[in-house]
Amino acid sequence: MWEIGHMKITKEVWQVGGDSLTAPEDAAIYMICFGEQAALIDAGTGKGHEKLISNIEKCGVNASQIEYLFITHCHFDHTGGAEKVREEVSCKLIVHELDAIYLEKGDSDVTAARWYGKVLEPLKVDHKITSFEESFLVGSRRIKSFHTPGHSPGSVVYLVESEDKKILFGQDVHGPLDPSILSNQEDYIKSLKFLLSLKIDILCEGHYGIFEGERDIQSFIKSFL
Ligand SMILES: [Zn+2]
Image 1: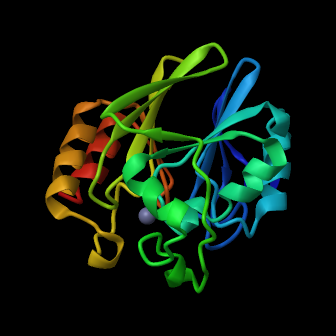
Image 2 (image 1 turned 60 degrees about the vertical axis):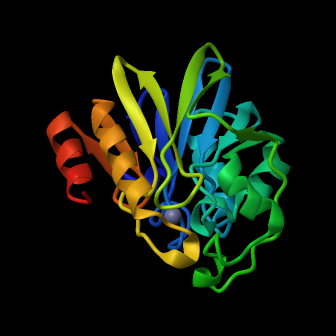
């Protein structure tokens, strides 16, 4: 399935980037397309940018349909490629305000860019999420964000419904927690408990792949409690 450059989750949700799809250091990159408009969830490191664009087109989506780049959190394996994506498709970059600070400053420590031997260039954020729950219109449908701090101060998850399934983009549900990236264990535990309460059907994780079915998802999340 990797030869075709993406993994289809539903007829309007795909994984288009990740370690075996774009570059070994990349966290997963997901795409939704609701009618005429599409959006990406996270951007990888940027090393596999050309592959990412070609993977998007292989899903039958024109890269120019991408209106938003929703960032789950500031870490470099999710954000290093954000500027390249924006330059290519001129989409809006959405980040929670508590992680946007470190992207706008170009902080290579809190964004963990240094873990990858990289420097994070300051990044302009188009919209900062400030509340616990926000909702964005993509084409004819909505994607919701929920603030789930812990792994980083401004971590968020995004929820969509597709083919009657609740699909959650929960990148880095697994952590890790580390003082250098301002993790907070108390917040993390609270956030995991909140994720359990969402009763999702499909969990799209940043590094652990895609989980389907309530039992597998609940046991994956509970394993970090
Ligand atoms: Zn992370």
